[in-house]
Length: 314
Image (tube, rainbow, N blue to C red; front, side):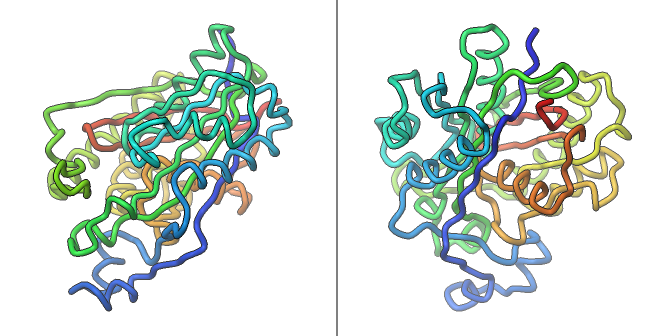
């Protein structure tokens, strides 16, 4: 079986910064409360841009960094819950914006777990020899489905995009194992309201689910990869809530410095949060070639997923 890893990574966050102090002006809340309960200090909102625009910016950077020519991309997968419109897909729009060949494209909706699902799906096509290079993008414009009168959810979300180009890597690198799952009995805990199109969440139930599932899934992929908790160099969790993230870290028996945390800068960017976090750690020299990573997330559905991989290509 072929080993599949990341050839190139790209990200994009909008210029507009919206801080907790900005929320104090429109909601009955405070910077102290938001920070204590979520770990968020600020988030980015896209103005004059759609999800496909952010996806494009991240994808261009990923392709440029990959060493793979745009004409050699064989498949495009976009993980998003906030497409520009119901159809066509963001992936199809992205194929056109990038000027790619008429390759197959698809959107993948697993909410905040979408990037994990997209990476696993893309890897299967490479492992079977069907395609050589797959572009996977996680992009969401959550500001367009946020109810800014609902203080329990409004402060949580931000906009952004992250992308990777996947391809075959040397034996010691790439994806070692994955774990995917869903529990439809929790579909009423996190959803977009049919009449208004805005996001609704049962925070207590989502918190309980996430605390349990993120930790369990991280342990599962570690064991599937034949590794121990001590072998994991960095935990890269979906940036939903610092307390949820820390619960997963503690389940993995890892110190705080071995967990990626960008939630203070970007809030919950859904499918974009994991690639944004990887980019942050690479930029700060905290992820190096040969490091073992756990990528883990959860989302509406309810869904969850994790990947254990060794970073690097050769």
